Image 1 (tube, rainbow, N blue to C red):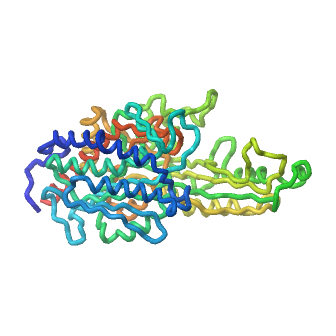
Image 2: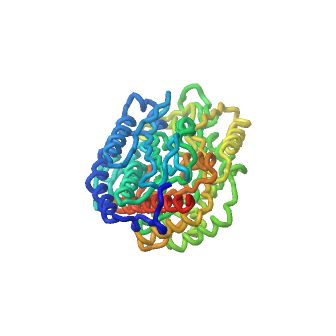
Length: 499
């Protein structure tokens, strides 16, 4: 272990050449990251769940090549970049950066004594969706002020560029960092079905993980650093009700043959109260911890009137209390119908009693609910005693665990607060998120002592997964600086512990 000064810098701002680092971050974003993100947005790199022929289509490979090419052009000391490929699975970008500036000497497997810093993101995308404003489109990058419109820029294409730039800035500033591993996957929007196999293949090489930095989450405002403290899990299935082998004239059969849609409604009533939206499965209902209830109340005071959704005039929300709304979208189960088959477009709907109705059910579950138990109860509830003797089938889809953050260690809590005050002149804020990042639950189980920083740029109106998705470039640039601050703070902690 190389000797360090008695008071090593805690943040990037305390490094010897911070001006060079700050200039590097700015120039990278303006001159390189935004133009590269524009090329990335133009690639329709749909996640495998939405493009079963992804391998033949080649769009995911094009996105991988773009990101790998950009990373390979960076001035990061001793960095190696590889694409891990496993049969039948999407590729994984693996970037290995050894400890820098005398912090530590890596062991034979590449890991540092204090544990590895894992930086995570993904490059696969959600489908196009309809409703893009005139002049915008999913594969058409458009810059308007601080906003870069197009599918995938905010979710989650920017993450690879921000992660590498933060590490590059630490080195340019003359700071220290521990071993850093950047993992960029290509199946997250499908529930990360390929990631467990990739992580298992890397497990011995990866070694102990000390800190996880993930840029695939949200922020409630663009004026401070937001830390995600929990993520819901998800259980999704495709449910089909069939009543005929082929469609028949509705004037002939209706009133005799039961409607597949009506029988589907009966099945849905088994799992959801249609008047309130309450999910009726016992395994999917978990009481939030007292600390999360307190956190929601504190966040509600910061947000005031709350988050904005593009609701229609006159719509009554399911709750008018902001704190309760935060708990509802982060710790309560909720059912969404995200797709349907068997129903023709209304303009082409003839007078036919349709043979079947199929619905894609997406059930968000609380962070600490067990997804396997929820899936088992869901299956038993929907398939038992089919209504009117109809043929009811269910095909499993995504099953991903939620995640509840461990308590922040003092060094990390102090670093996050200091970074937020320095970068935004505002204290850090805490908030649960209603979405799912399967990798977090996976790493939390594998590395129970690791610390997690989950944050992101999906803020007000950014509309990930929907039309008019955008990346707030100015916020992403500041978040890159926060990332660099945290990497330096981690190195400072490692240095102090090794003395």
